[in-house]
Amino acid sequence: MELVIFLGSLFFFLFLNIPIALVMVLSAIVLMLYGGDGDAMIIPQSMVDGVNNYPLMAIPFFVFAGEIMAKGGLSKRVILLAQLMIGRVKGGLGYATIIASVIFAGLMGSSVGEAAALMGILYPMMKDAGYNPGRAGGIISSGAILGPIIPPSANFILLGATMELSITKLFMIGLVPGLIIGFFLLLMWFFVVRIDGYTETITFTKAEAINILKEATPAFMLPVLLLGGIRGGVFTPTEGGAFAAVYAIVVTVFYYRELSLRNLLRVSATAARSTAVVMLIVGAATAVGWFITAAQIPDQMKAFFEPLVPTPTLLLIAIMIFLFAAGMVMDLTPNILLFAPVFYPLTTAAGIDPYFFGLLFVLNVGIGVITPPVGTVLFVVCGSAGISMGQLVRKMAPFLIMEMAVLFLLLFFPKLSLVPLKWLM
Image (tube, rainbow, N blue to C red):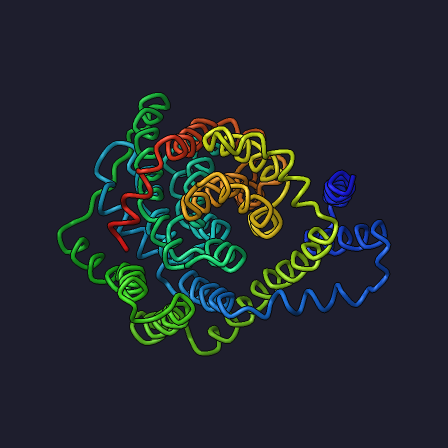
Protein backbone atom coordinates (compact mmCIF):
# COMPACT_ATOMS: atom_id res chain seq x y z
CA MET A 1 0.00 0.00 0.00
CA GLU A 2 2.91 2.34 0.79
CA LEU A 3 4.15 1.97 -2.79
CA VAL A 4 0.74 3.00 -4.16
CA ILE A 5 0.61 5.98 -1.78
CA PHE A 6 4.10 7.13 -2.82
CA LEU A 7 3.63 6.78 -6.58
CA GLY A 8 0.12 8.22 -6.41
CA SER A 9 1.23 11.32 -4.50
CA LEU A 10 4.33 11.72 -6.67
CA PHE A 11 2.47 11.71 -10.00
CA PHE A 12 -0.48 13.68 -8.59
CA PHE A 13 1.79 16.57 -7.60
CA LEU A 14 3.71 16.29 -10.88
CA PHE A 15 0.54 16.68 -12.91
CA LEU A 16 -0.27 19.82 -10.91
CA ASN A 17 2.89 21.28 -12.51
CA ILE A 18 4.59 21.82 -9.14
CA PRO A 19 8.43 22.11 -9.26
CA ILE A 20 10.03 18.69 -8.88
CA ALA A 21 11.96 19.53 -5.67
CA LEU A 22 8.75 20.62 -3.95
CA VAL A 23 6.96 17.55 -5.36
CA MET A 24 9.43 15.27 -3.58
CA VAL A 25 9.17 17.22 -0.32
CA LEU A 26 5.37 16.96 -0.49
CA SER A 27 5.62 13.23 -1.23
CA ALA A 28 7.87 12.87 1.82
CA ILE A 29 5.26 14.67 3.94
CA VAL A 30 2.52 12.35 2.62
CA LEU A 31 4.58 9.28 3.51
CA MET A 32 5.41 10.78 6.91
CA LEU A 33 1.72 11.37 7.69
CA TYR A 34 0.68 7.95 6.37
CA GLY A 35 3.35 6.20 8.42
CA GLY A 36 2.43 8.09 11.56
CA ASP A 37 5.91 9.54 12.06
CA GLY A 38 5.25 13.12 13.11
CA ASP A 39 8.88 14.24 13.45
CA ALA A 40 8.98 16.88 10.72
CA MET A 41 12.65 17.65 11.46
CA ILE A 42 13.60 14.47 9.61
CA ILE A 43 12.95 16.24 6.28
CA PRO A 44 15.35 19.22 6.67
CA GLN A 45 17.95 17.03 8.38
CA SER A 46 17.83 14.52 5.52
CA MET A 47 18.09 17.31 2.94
CA VAL A 48 21.23 18.68 4.58
CA ASP A 49 22.76 15.20 4.87
CA GLY A 50 21.94 14.49 1.22
CA VAL A 51 23.94 17.41 -0.19
CA ASN A 52 26.81 16.94 2.30
CA ASN A 53 28.52 14.50 -0.04
CA TYR A 54 32.09 14.92 -1.34
CA PRO A 55 31.58 13.40 -4.84
CA LEU A 56 28.72 15.86 -5.44
CA MET A 57 31.22 18.73 -5.20
CA ALA A 58 32.15 17.93 -8.79
CA ILE A 59 28.74 19.09 -10.02
CA PRO A 60 29.13 22.86 -9.36
CA PHE A 61 32.58 22.80 -10.98
CA PHE A 62 31.34 21.10 -14.16
CA VAL A 63 28.25 23.33 -14.29
CA PHE A 64 30.49 26.39 -13.93
CA ALA A 65 32.86 25.14 -16.64
CA GLY A 66 29.94 24.45 -18.97
CA GLU A 67 28.50 27.93 -18.50
CA ILE A 68 31.88 29.52 -19.18
CA MET A 69 32.33 27.52 -22.37
CA ALA A 70 28.84 28.37 -23.58
CA LYS A 71 29.35 32.12 -23.03
CA GLY A 72 33.06 32.40 -23.79
CA GLY A 73 33.27 31.48 -27.45
CA LEU A 74 34.06 27.77 -27.27
CA SER A 75 30.64 26.82 -28.65
CA LYS A 76 30.99 28.47 -32.06
CA ARG A 77 34.55 27.18 -32.47
CA VAL A 78 33.47 23.60 -31.76
CA ILE A 79 30.68 23.95 -34.33
CA LEU A 80 33.10 25.32 -36.95
CA LEU A 81 35.39 22.36 -36.25
CA ALA A 82 32.48 19.95 -36.76
CA GLN A 83 31.57 21.67 -40.02
CA LEU A 84 35.17 21.44 -41.18
CA MET A 85 35.27 17.71 -40.36
CA ILE A 86 32.17 16.63 -42.30
CA GLY A 87 30.46 19.64 -43.87
CA ARG A 88 31.54 18.89 -47.46
CA VAL A 89 28.95 16.12 -47.96
CA LYS A 90 25.29 16.77 -48.81
CA GLY A 91 23.29 17.63 -45.71
CA GLY A 92 26.51 18.80 -44.11
CA LEU A 93 24.80 20.94 -41.48
CA GLY A 94 22.98 17.90 -40.08
CA TYR A 95 26.15 15.82 -39.99
CA ALA A 96 27.99 18.72 -38.34
CA THR A 97 25.23 18.99 -35.72
CA ILE A 98 25.73 15.36 -34.69
CA ILE A 99 29.53 15.68 -34.57
CA ALA A 100 29.16 18.90 -32.57
CA SER A 101 26.79 17.09 -30.17
CA VAL A 102 29.46 14.47 -29.48
CA ILE A 103 32.12 17.11 -28.82
CA PHE A 104 29.76 19.28 -26.75
CA ALA A 105 28.90 16.25 -24.59
CA GLY A 106 32.56 16.00 -23.66
CA LEU A 107 32.63 19.68 -22.79
CA MET A 108 29.33 20.39 -21.02
CA GLY A 109 27.85 17.10 -19.74
CA SER A 110 24.35 18.57 -19.87
CA SER A 111 21.60 17.75 -22.36
CA VAL A 112 19.70 21.01 -21.80
CA GLY A 113 22.83 23.18 -22.03
CA GLU A 114 23.93 21.36 -25.16
CA ALA A 115 20.53 21.78 -26.83
CA ALA A 116 20.39 25.48 -25.97
CA ALA A 117 23.90 26.13 -27.34
CA LEU A 118 23.28 24.27 -30.61
CA MET A 119 19.86 25.87 -31.10
CA GLY A 120 21.38 29.33 -30.76
CA ILE A 121 24.01 28.77 -33.47
CA LEU A 122 23.09 25.85 -35.75
CA TYR A 123 19.30 26.08 -35.90
CA PRO A 124 19.24 29.47 -37.71
CA MET A 125 21.82 28.13 -40.19
CA MET A 126 19.74 25.02 -40.90
CA LYS A 127 16.59 27.08 -41.26
CA ASP A 128 18.30 29.41 -43.74
CA ALA A 129 19.49 26.36 -45.71
CA GLY A 130 15.88 25.22 -46.16
CA TYR A 131 15.68 22.55 -43.48
CA ASN A 132 12.26 21.62 -42.14
CA PRO A 133 12.03 23.34 -38.70
CA GLY A 134 10.90 20.14 -36.99
CA ARG A 135 13.69 18.13 -38.59
CA ALA A 136 16.33 20.69 -37.62
CA GLY A 137 15.06 20.79 -34.06
CA GLY A 138 14.76 17.00 -34.04
CA ILE A 139 18.40 16.33 -34.90
CA ILE A 140 19.53 18.84 -32.25
CA SER A 141 17.23 17.26 -29.64
CA SER A 142 18.34 13.71 -30.37
CA GLY A 143 22.00 14.66 -30.19
CA ALA A 144 21.47 16.36 -26.83
CA ILE A 145 21.00 13.04 -25.00
CA LEU A 146 24.72 12.40 -25.47
CA GLY A 147 25.37 14.96 -22.71
CA PRO A 148 24.43 12.56 -19.87
CA ILE A 149 26.33 9.63 -21.47
CA ILE A 150 29.68 10.90 -22.75
CA PRO A 151 31.94 11.99 -19.86
CA PRO A 152 32.13 14.21 -17.95
CA SER A 153 28.49 13.65 -17.00
CA ALA A 154 26.86 15.23 -13.96
CA ASN A 155 24.30 12.41 -14.08
CA PHE A 156 27.00 9.76 -13.70
CA ILE A 157 28.34 11.75 -10.74
CA LEU A 158 24.88 11.64 -9.14
CA LEU A 159 24.54 7.95 -9.88
CA GLY A 160 27.98 7.16 -8.48
CA ALA A 161 27.27 9.10 -5.29
CA THR A 162 23.85 7.44 -4.91
CA MET A 163 25.01 3.85 -5.57
CA GLU A 164 28.51 4.29 -4.10
CA LEU A 165 30.20 3.34 -7.37
CA SER A 166 33.44 4.61 -8.89
CA ILE A 167 32.63 7.76 -10.85
CA THR A 168 35.75 7.21 -12.94
CA LYS A 169 34.47 3.80 -14.08
CA LEU A 170 31.04 5.27 -14.81
CA PHE A 171 32.70 7.94 -16.93
CA MET A 172 34.70 5.34 -18.85
CA ILE A 173 31.76 2.98 -19.49
CA GLY A 174 29.78 5.81 -21.08
CA LEU A 175 32.43 6.81 -23.61
CA VAL A 176 32.16 4.06 -26.25
CA PRO A 177 28.33 3.69 -26.09
CA GLY A 178 28.07 7.46 -26.55
CA LEU A 179 30.19 7.21 -29.69
CA ILE A 180 28.05 4.28 -30.89
CA ILE A 181 24.91 6.42 -30.52
CA GLY A 182 26.62 9.22 -32.45
CA PHE A 183 27.50 6.78 -35.25
CA PHE A 184 23.92 5.48 -35.51
CA LEU A 185 22.58 9.04 -35.60
CA LEU A 186 24.94 9.78 -38.50
CA LEU A 187 23.69 6.63 -40.21
CA MET A 188 20.06 7.67 -39.77
CA TRP A 189 20.84 11.18 -41.06
CA PHE A 190 22.36 9.60 -44.18
CA PHE A 191 18.91 8.23 -45.06
CA VAL A 192 17.00 11.33 -43.90
CA VAL A 193 19.08 13.55 -46.21
CA ARG A 194 17.98 11.47 -49.18
CA ILE A 195 14.33 11.41 -48.07
CA ASP A 196 14.14 15.16 -47.40
CA GLY A 197 16.37 16.10 -50.34
CA TYR A 198 18.91 18.32 -48.57
CA THR A 199 21.80 19.26 -50.84
CA GLU A 200 23.71 22.01 -49.03
CA THR A 201 27.44 21.59 -48.37
CA ILE A 202 29.93 23.60 -46.33
CA THR A 203 33.38 24.41 -47.67
CA PHE A 204 36.32 26.38 -46.30
CA THR A 205 39.49 27.73 -47.87
CA LYS A 206 42.82 26.32 -46.72
CA ALA A 207 43.52 29.46 -44.67
CA GLU A 208 40.08 29.26 -43.02
CA ALA A 209 40.60 25.56 -42.22
CA ILE A 210 43.96 26.25 -40.57
CA ASN A 211 42.46 29.09 -38.53
CA ILE A 212 39.52 26.90 -37.42
CA LEU A 213 41.90 24.14 -36.28
CA LYS A 214 44.03 26.66 -34.41
CA GLU A 215 41.05 28.25 -32.68
CA ALA A 216 39.27 24.97 -31.86
CA THR A 217 42.27 23.07 -30.49
CA PRO A 218 42.05 24.48 -26.92
CA ALA A 219 38.35 23.58 -26.75
CA PHE A 220 38.90 20.10 -28.20
CA MET A 221 41.78 19.42 -25.80
CA LEU A 222 39.67 19.96 -22.67
CA PRO A 223 37.88 16.57 -22.69
CA VAL A 224 41.14 14.88 -23.73
CA LEU A 225 43.08 16.37 -20.82
CA LEU A 226 40.18 15.86 -18.41
CA LEU A 227 39.56 12.19 -19.18
CA GLY A 228 43.27 11.51 -19.46
CA GLY A 229 43.85 13.07 -16.05
CA ILE A 230 41.01 11.16 -14.41
CA ARG A 231 41.95 7.87 -16.08
CA GLY A 232 45.64 8.32 -15.26
CA GLY A 233 44.94 9.08 -11.60
CA VAL A 234 46.31 12.62 -11.85
CA PHE A 235 43.12 13.92 -10.23
CA THR A 236 39.78 12.63 -8.98
CA PRO A 237 36.53 13.45 -10.83
CA THR A 238 35.89 16.23 -8.29
CA GLU A 239 39.37 17.68 -8.81
CA GLY A 240 38.80 17.20 -12.56
CA GLY A 241 35.76 19.46 -12.32
CA ALA A 242 37.90 22.17 -10.73
CA PHE A 243 40.52 21.68 -13.46
CA ALA A 244 37.84 22.03 -16.16
CA ALA A 245 36.58 25.28 -14.61
CA VAL A 246 40.07 26.81 -14.34
CA TYR A 247 40.97 25.65 -17.88
CA ALA A 248 37.76 27.17 -19.28
CA ILE A 249 38.48 30.50 -17.55
CA VAL A 250 42.04 30.65 -18.87
CA VAL A 251 41.01 29.81 -22.44
CA THR A 252 37.98 32.12 -22.70
CA VAL A 253 39.37 35.09 -20.75
CA PHE A 254 43.04 35.10 -21.76
CA TYR A 255 43.24 33.15 -25.05
CA TYR A 256 39.98 33.91 -26.89
CA ARG A 257 39.45 37.12 -24.88
CA GLU A 258 35.69 36.88 -25.41
CA LEU A 259 34.73 36.73 -21.73
CA SER A 260 35.43 39.81 -19.63
CA LEU A 261 35.86 39.66 -15.87
CA ARG A 262 32.48 41.38 -15.46
CA ASN A 263 30.78 38.76 -17.63
CA LEU A 264 32.64 36.07 -15.71
CA LEU A 265 30.84 37.23 -12.57
CA ARG A 266 27.50 37.01 -14.39
CA VAL A 267 28.35 33.51 -15.59
CA SER A 268 29.27 32.58 -12.01
CA ALA A 269 25.85 33.75 -10.81
CA THR A 270 24.09 31.71 -13.52
CA ALA A 271 26.13 28.62 -12.62
CA ALA A 272 25.34 29.14 -8.93
CA ARG A 273 21.61 29.24 -9.65
CA SER A 274 21.81 26.09 -11.78
CA THR A 275 23.80 24.30 -9.07
CA ALA A 276 21.35 25.41 -6.38
CA VAL A 277 18.46 23.86 -8.35
CA VAL A 278 20.30 20.54 -8.70
CA MET A 279 21.32 20.46 -5.04
CA LEU A 280 17.80 21.32 -3.90
CA ILE A 281 16.52 18.35 -5.91
CA VAL A 282 19.24 16.13 -4.40
CA GLY A 283 18.29 17.20 -0.89
CA ALA A 284 14.58 16.70 -1.51
CA ALA A 285 15.20 13.26 -3.03
CA THR A 286 17.25 12.29 0.01
CA ALA A 287 14.39 13.32 2.30
CA VAL A 288 11.78 11.33 0.40
CA GLY A 289 14.29 8.47 0.17
CA TRP A 290 14.42 8.30 3.96
CA PHE A 291 10.67 7.79 4.15
CA ILE A 292 10.71 5.38 1.20
CA THR A 293 13.17 3.21 3.11
CA ALA A 294 11.21 3.53 6.38
CA ALA A 295 8.02 2.49 4.57
CA GLN A 296 9.87 -0.55 3.12
CA ILE A 297 8.95 0.48 -0.42
CA PRO A 298 12.23 -0.95 -1.82
CA ASP A 299 11.20 -4.33 -0.37
CA GLN A 300 7.82 -4.04 -2.07
CA MET A 301 9.45 -3.17 -5.40
CA LYS A 302 11.85 -6.04 -4.90
CA ALA A 303 8.97 -8.46 -4.28
CA PHE A 304 7.29 -7.25 -7.49
CA PHE A 305 10.39 -7.74 -9.68
CA GLU A 306 11.96 -10.63 -7.73
CA PRO A 307 10.44 -13.41 -9.89
CA LEU A 308 12.58 -12.07 -12.74
CA VAL A 309 15.88 -12.19 -10.82
CA PRO A 310 16.79 -15.69 -12.13
CA THR A 311 16.53 -14.29 -15.68
CA PRO A 312 18.71 -11.12 -15.69
CA THR A 313 17.83 -10.11 -19.25
CA LEU A 314 14.08 -10.18 -18.57
CA LEU A 315 14.67 -8.28 -15.33
CA LEU A 316 16.57 -5.56 -17.21
CA ILE A 317 13.86 -5.33 -19.87
CA ALA A 318 11.17 -4.91 -17.17
CA ILE A 319 13.23 -2.24 -15.38
CA MET A 320 13.93 -0.42 -18.66
CA ILE A 321 10.20 -0.31 -19.48
CA PHE A 322 9.45 1.11 -16.03
CA LEU A 323 12.23 3.70 -16.31
CA PHE A 324 11.14 4.73 -19.80
CA ALA A 325 7.64 5.43 -18.47
CA ALA A 326 9.09 7.34 -15.51
CA GLY A 327 11.37 9.31 -17.85
CA MET A 328 8.36 10.56 -19.78
CA VAL A 329 7.12 12.48 -16.73
CA MET A 330 10.28 13.20 -14.70
CA ASP A 331 13.72 14.60 -15.46
CA LEU A 332 16.99 12.67 -15.14
CA THR A 333 18.02 13.87 -11.69
CA PRO A 334 14.92 12.80 -9.70
CA ASN A 335 14.74 9.52 -11.61
CA ILE A 336 18.32 8.69 -10.65
CA LEU A 337 17.90 9.70 -7.03
CA LEU A 338 14.57 7.95 -6.52
CA PHE A 339 14.86 4.72 -8.48
CA ALA A 340 18.57 3.84 -8.61
CA PRO A 341 18.64 2.82 -4.91
CA VAL A 342 15.48 0.75 -5.48
CA PHE A 343 16.68 -1.25 -8.49
CA TYR A 344 20.37 -1.53 -7.63
CA PRO A 345 19.93 -4.34 -5.04
CA LEU A 346 17.75 -6.28 -7.49
CA THR A 347 20.31 -6.12 -10.28
CA THR A 348 23.09 -7.04 -7.85
CA ALA A 349 21.12 -10.11 -6.75
CA ALA A 350 20.70 -11.06 -10.41
CA GLY A 351 24.47 -10.87 -10.97
CA ILE A 352 24.29 -7.87 -13.31
CA ASP A 353 27.42 -5.73 -13.45
CA PRO A 354 26.61 -2.51 -11.55
CA TYR A 355 28.40 -0.28 -14.06
CA PHE A 356 26.59 -1.91 -16.96
CA PHE A 357 23.29 -1.31 -15.15
CA GLY A 358 24.31 2.28 -14.41
CA LEU A 359 24.96 2.88 -18.11
CA LEU A 360 21.58 1.48 -19.16
CA PHE A 361 19.86 3.44 -16.38
CA VAL A 362 21.32 6.82 -17.35
CA LEU A 363 20.84 6.22 -21.08
CA ASN A 364 17.20 5.25 -20.55
CA VAL A 365 16.24 8.21 -18.38
CA GLY A 366 18.41 10.39 -20.64
CA ILE A 367 16.16 9.48 -23.56
CA GLY A 368 13.34 10.73 -21.34
CA VAL A 369 14.47 14.34 -21.86
CA ILE A 370 13.31 14.10 -25.50
CA THR A 371 10.06 12.20 -24.93
CA PRO A 372 6.73 13.95 -24.34
CA PRO A 373 4.92 15.10 -22.31
CA VAL A 374 7.66 16.36 -19.93
CA GLY A 375 10.84 16.30 -22.01
CA THR A 376 12.95 19.22 -20.83
CA VAL A 377 15.00 19.35 -24.04
CA LEU A 378 11.77 19.41 -26.08
CA PHE A 379 10.64 22.54 -24.23
CA VAL A 380 14.00 24.24 -24.89
CA VAL A 381 13.95 23.40 -28.61
CA CYS A 382 10.26 24.22 -29.14
CA GLY A 383 10.68 27.54 -27.33
CA SER A 384 13.74 28.51 -29.37
CA ALA A 385 12.32 27.38 -32.73
CA GLY A 386 8.74 28.56 -32.18
CA ILE A 387 7.29 25.19 -33.23
CA SER A 388 4.78 22.85 -31.58
CA MET A 389 5.89 19.77 -29.66
CA GLY A 390 3.89 17.55 -32.02
CA GLN A 391 5.72 18.95 -35.04
CA LEU A 392 9.07 18.42 -33.35
CA VAL A 393 8.37 14.88 -32.12
CA ARG A 394 7.12 13.69 -35.52
CA LYS A 395 10.30 14.78 -37.27
CA MET A 396 12.51 13.56 -34.41
CA ALA A 397 10.88 10.09 -34.31
CA PRO A 398 13.43 8.27 -36.56
CA PHE A 399 16.31 9.40 -34.34
CA LEU A 400 14.43 8.54 -31.14
CA ILE A 401 13.68 5.04 -32.48
CA MET A 402 17.36 4.62 -33.38
CA GLU A 403 18.43 5.59 -29.85
CA MET A 404 15.96 3.14 -28.31
CA ALA A 405 17.37 0.47 -30.63
CA VAL A 406 20.90 1.23 -29.37
CA LEU A 407 19.67 0.97 -25.77
CA PHE A 408 18.37 -2.55 -26.37
CA LEU A 409 21.44 -3.43 -28.46
CA LEU A 410 23.59 -2.58 -25.43
CA LEU A 411 21.18 -4.49 -23.16
CA PHE A 412 21.38 -7.71 -25.20
CA PHE A 413 25.11 -7.42 -25.92
CA PRO A 414 26.77 -6.24 -22.67
CA LYS A 415 30.26 -6.75 -24.09
CA LEU A 416 29.77 -3.68 -26.29
CA SER A 417 30.22 -1.59 -23.13
CA LEU A 418 32.01 -3.92 -20.68
CA VAL A 419 34.91 -4.88 -22.97
CA PRO A 420 35.80 -1.21 -23.74
CA LEU A 421 35.47 -0.46 -20.01
CA LYS A 422 38.02 -3.17 -19.20
CA TRP A 423 40.32 -1.82 -21.89
CA LEU A 424 39.94 1.82 -20.78
CA MET A 425 40.52 0.97 -17.13
